[in-house]
Amino acid sequence: MPIDLSCVIIAGGQARRFGSDKRRLRLWGEAGPSLLEHTLAVAQTVCDQVVVSLNDPAAWPELGVPLVQDRYANAGPLAGIVAGMQHSASEWTLVLAADLPLLATPFLAELLAQPRHGLAIVPQRQPGDQRHAGWEPLCALYQRDCLPIFAQALAAGQHQLIKIIEQLPPQLWPIASDSPWQYCLHNLNRLADMQQLAAFKVL
Image (tube, rainbow, N blue to C red; front, side, top):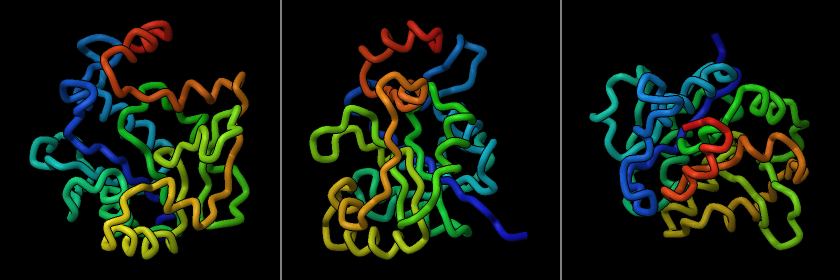
């Protein structure tokens, strides 16, 4: 059966800014899913195939989905996207960061419902007056033809994802500042971010 939509979850593994392995942070108490498990579960509600790109696949046998490792060290999320998209069997691939604790199925459904006129659909949080302001390339849709572009940039040592997708150019999906979708894009980078998430009763 053809696969309509694939997903690549960028899970990395170094978490320098957070100070510990945030992927294993438990949501909703000790009995809740880990941050990575949550992202995976939400992705599986809309995608036929999910691949997780991380640096330590042997440490995650419980995920039950294909795990891929970057071929290029210290190349940032772009290396994970390339590694994951090489395993994609669909025309479009949803790329998600693993640190989106407020990610929800309705938000992804809205993203998938956007008209597809180019090679990429990237949410843009408003206001986005400055160049690249509010772009969310790690919660976006990429067409298969992006893979050779990404792979070529990676091989050339160009690792800045925003600058690469700017050349496509991407189709932007504006998200108003008062939209509830803004919360779905809230990522967890530092311990201080946990205080904000506590207000939403996530942690």
